[in-house]
Amino acid sequence: MEQKWSIRLIRFAAVFGIIGTYLGSHMSGQMDYSLRPIHAHILLVGWLSVFAWGIFYKVYRVKNKKLVSIHSILGMAGSLGLTIGMWMYTLNPFNLGDTFVLVFFIVGGTLLLLAFALFVAITFLTEKTADQ
Image (tube, rainbow, N blue to C red; front, top):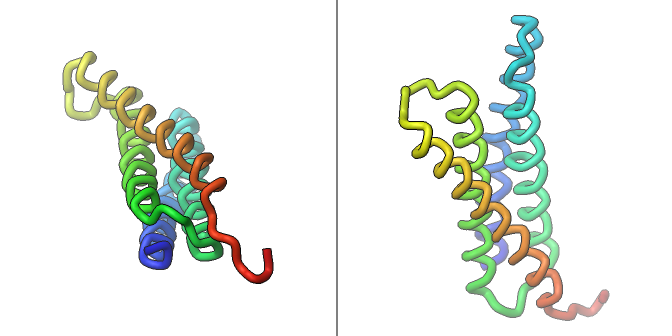
């Protein structure tokens, strides 16, 4: 289970990595840094955190396999929801209602917070191996 989610998380992170670096390159070329917070969250949450989770699942075995799936889905949904919500909150490109945009942003952030909290618990639920 961990191996399957490991590669999924790493691939998901890679997509965030290319989007984040493209956004940074675009901002630099345009000399317009108004999207700095979005760029930073894409790289820190979408690239770095999700990648680290993928590596963790590559290295460690978790006692409760269902938690791996729940955490991974929460982490990916939260990363996507937070960064898209932040983008919509900043630019509102579709002229959606302010309440909807704010709720979308908050739900994404909350899912990500839950993923981080669950990850803390998972780190204490690893199986012992010969080298531990």
